[in-house]
Amino acid sequence: MIGSATRLEAPAMTSTAQARRRQRLACAAFRLCASLCGLLIIAVMTGILLELLLNSRQAISTFGWKFLVSAEWDPVAGKFGALSSIYGTVVSTLIALIIAVPTSLVIALFLVELCPKRLSGFFRTAIELLAAIPSIIYGMWGLFVFAPFMAEHVQPLLSEYLGFIPFFQGTPMGIGMLTAGVILALMILPFVSSVMRDVLEMVPAVLKESAYGLGATTWEATKDVSLRYGKAGMVGAIFLGLGRAIGETMAVTFVIGNDHSLSASLFASGNTIASTLANEFTEASDPLYLSALVELGLVLFLMASIFQIIAQLWLRAATSKMGAQ
Amino acid sequence: MKERSITTRKAVNGVVTAAAGAAAVFGLAMLLWILGVVILRGIAAIDWSFFTQLPSPPGESGGGVANAIVGTFIITVVAAIIGVPLGVLAGTYVAEFGRDSRFASAIRFCANTLMGAPSIVVGVFVYTFMVVPMGRFSGIAGSVALAIIMLPIVARTTEDMLRLVPNSLRESALALGAPEHNMIVQVVFRAARSGMLTGIMLAVARVSGETAPLLFTTLNSPYWTVALDKPMANLTVTIFNYAMSPYTDWQAKAWGASLLITATVLIMNLAARAAARERRFGS
Image 1 (cartoon, rainbow over the protein chains, first blue to last red):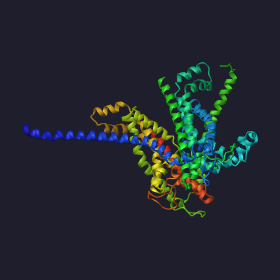
Image 2: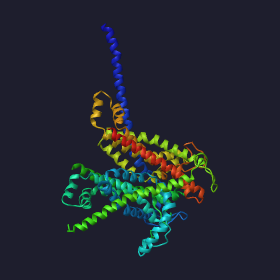
Image 3: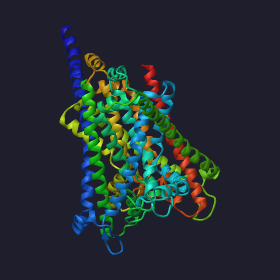
Image 4: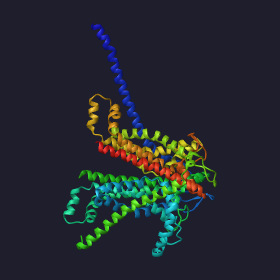
């Protein structure tokens, strides 16, 4: 009996040991796979940077720093300067921020403090759906509907009353820098307002209540208490919007007019880095041309990354401060 | 702080309140304006042949975008097949294994930066990385570009959702003798399932409307193509090409395609939100 028992037990022992080893192996394999996927994200990030650097080295060595300050863009003569694209990117993004930041702030204020509970879910979804509409749809609407609307109704008014400012001079054609900026504003509004809403919601009720207890109005409580308390988060929200607006491609390509010229007038056609890439990349047959376009992509990637990192840092500062309270 | 009369303060407050309400209504109005235009002009352009026929030659009326509908579907599905598992695993690593280690922080940092990377730059990257070595534009290059866009989004939402799962669940699974990978897949994933599903659906919805990363990876094609190694017809690049063309018939087709893409993206988006809401009521 004893003999048969040990004979029975022995294989059972090895099978548990085997099963355990298999389990340990499976665990290690799973862990390895997961860490490789994590590594992949780092690899993609560095890969993008390296690929862009590598493929733009011809333009970098030919033009050097002058690439960034020259406005000459002449594919036939082989002369490339990024200034008009960078200028257009900066100006359209600035217009977008000037419109979107105050609007997002009051929308966030409305959703958090003023709106009746029953309506707030509805408005929230509506604003978030604005963010879900694909960029190219904004482009279609911008080109066929909004640009004519700007040309007929908005731009004549601007040039009549504000025409003494060089920004608002020129023929109101509809397409151009201003229209692109307004559409960008509309596109980043949901992102900025949703972060601002989160920040306002994180303000402890007791702080706001003490402001109200001292007789503050809603706006005073928001301006002097909530905004001060959530300052870091607000800055983070703005940089997040900045990072989004700067790389937006299709909507801008449809309405900006795609012209490599510098003009003070916001009614004039222009271009951005993203729109230049979208328009010219497949046409670039010459290696130097392609290399200059890749360098434009590199500039855009660096700009967007820097704003994204700044946004992260401010938002992290905001949450860690609020978590500590 | 300077003294102000109660009337001024109340007036300022009233102005801000009115502006806040007006801004929210403005946002709603813009949404309705865009959707209204897309629906009206889109429906006018859609008929049976829109779904069943190949594009007509430039300037000729008739034809459809059947190949582009199929192409967009294939490109998006392949992108999801590549991007979702990789993203989920990466997010799992950060949430379950790496936690606050330096490696995990580096992954999180790169994922955040990648999420902010302009989609057109991803297109340029895939062009230099895949299209140039392969020697031609291809559907698979477009899928890879979209997968790269999905990867950080899926990884970050997975991480966030896994972090919401209470540790007591993990401990009880381990105490019952479950090996770590079983614990993660069968207990933690299950607890975080609906949140992860919402994140994945939102990511797929977002990339299915992308145009910029496809412009110089997949390009476009007037033919039937299901081969992933050739240029492939797709709706978004078709919209771009048709809208910029001088032919009114093509422009009408672009509106039809716009309606199709918008409806798909918004329905997926609303479905993802509904799934998230269910979870909130369930727990």
